[in-house]
Amino acid sequence: MYKILTLNNISSLGLQRLPREDYEIGSEISQPDGILLRSFKMHDMVIPDSVKAIGRAGAGVNNIPVDQMSSRGVPVFNAPGANANAVKELVLAGLLMASRNINSAMKFASGIEGDDAAISVAVEAGKKNFVGSELPSKTLGVIGLGAIGVRVANAALSLGMKVVGYDPLISVQSAWQLSSGVEKAISLDHLFTQCDAVTVHVPLIDATRGIVSAERLKLMPKGGIIVNLARGGICDDTAVLASLNKGHTSTYVIDFPTAELMKHPKVLAFPHLGASTNEAEENCAVMVADSVRDFLDDGTVVNA
Ligand code: MLT
Image (tube, rainbow, N blue to C red; front, side):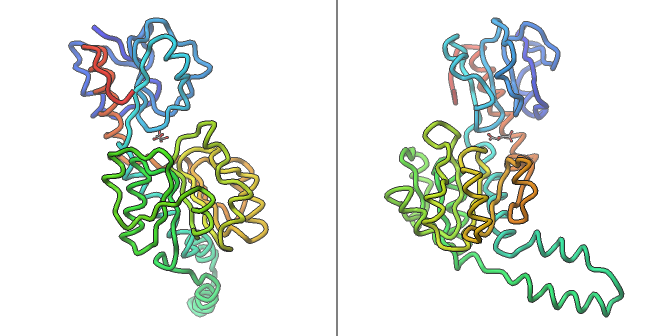
């Protein structure tokens, strides 16, 4: 019998991959063989020596001490691509919200008071104040062409946007999935000079920390949109806020709000919602439960 500790709610479809006759699963299990989690931060946790495998129901693994686990020979499995469609949809929502002023316009509309005549006057004012622009008039820069970035790039193309991508390490599989209409930038700076909107789809590692910097924001045309549904820290928030304040960047769409970002009128902040769909939660849970089960059963390693 294997014991699996769950540190977050894991979709029941995933847990069903671990047959009850062989697996005891719970959030209070001691001496577990495996751990399944989503966003629980494991860095301050004492991880029992009994643990042989960890499964993260998502793409990023920066809430797990991967180096420490590697030195113990414990694989950390993730779920690459399993929530990619969900993230793609929220990127598109962010781009649409930004380019059509949806957040400000809805706040304005919800503040309208009075009788039908007063509402009609306010509606006319709103119509003038919140004129937007259309996506096909924009070029989108996609930084990181893995499972998520490729989907975002293809979806943006299908909406009529021009798309420029950059990834120094694009995988063969991703390259195959990338529509031919996506132009490849020769460098990050090259991408920023061409793009009205930039979205990041890379993990947060030393090489990606702060890649959306003050210098690169200046390379963008005025009125640019920055989207970060990947990880806080990839964009230099101080630089983005300064650019918003100067009116150079028009909107910052972020899934990792901080107190300072939350109060800025040009920031569209989501509460880490990129992967929060029923479908993505099920896909991720199934993928990591399979990986942890197969490793514990016979040592198979997939997605570690
Ligand atoms: C991811 O890394 O894929 C997401 O952070 C998953 C999540 O929202 O838990």
